[in-house]
Length: 180
Ligand code: URA
Image 1: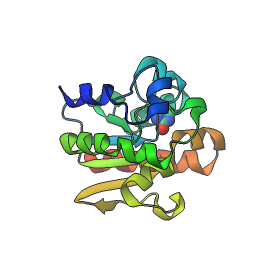
Image 2: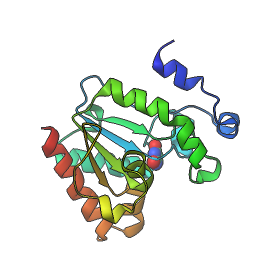
Image 3: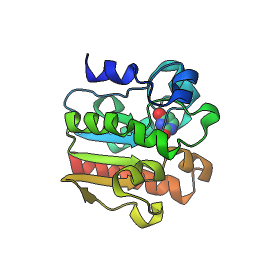
C-alpha cells in the first residue's frame, strides 16, 4: 500500500473516521520546494478531498500567486487529515494520532522551506507557544527551515486592512523568495 492509501484507510480517531466524507491526504506536487501546513480540513475540503479549497484556500492561492509562486507548485498538508465535526479544533489525541502520517509525508517531500499557517501547525513543529512569539522568523527544526505565519482564516477575520492580512502577505512573499 502507498503512504496515501495507508492514510486514507486510517481509523485511529474513531469519531473522525465515522463522520468524515473523505480523508484529505494533501497536495504533493513532485519537486515542490515549499510546503504549506494548515490545521485540519473544513467542510469543503472534507467534501472535495483537497486541502484549502474554501475561503481560506482561495486567499492562500491569491497571496501565493501575488508572491510569484502558483499554488500548483506548492505542497499543501494539514496536521490532521480528517475534518473535526462542526469545525471544532482537533484534540491533542487526534493530532498525536495523525502525527506519524504528516511526519512521513514531510520526510518524503523534504521541502526546502515549511510555512505553517496558524498556531496549531506552528505548535506541531515548535511546541506550545504563541503565534506572535514565533511568526515571521525562520526557525530550524530537525534540520528543516520552518516559517510560522497567520492562518488565512485569521487574515479574513481581520479584514483587508488588518495586521494578520498584511503579515500573512509579507510572510508568504518572504517564503517564496527563500525557495526561489
Ligand atoms: N483550514 C485548514 O487549516 N486547512 C484546510 O485544509 C482548510 C482550512
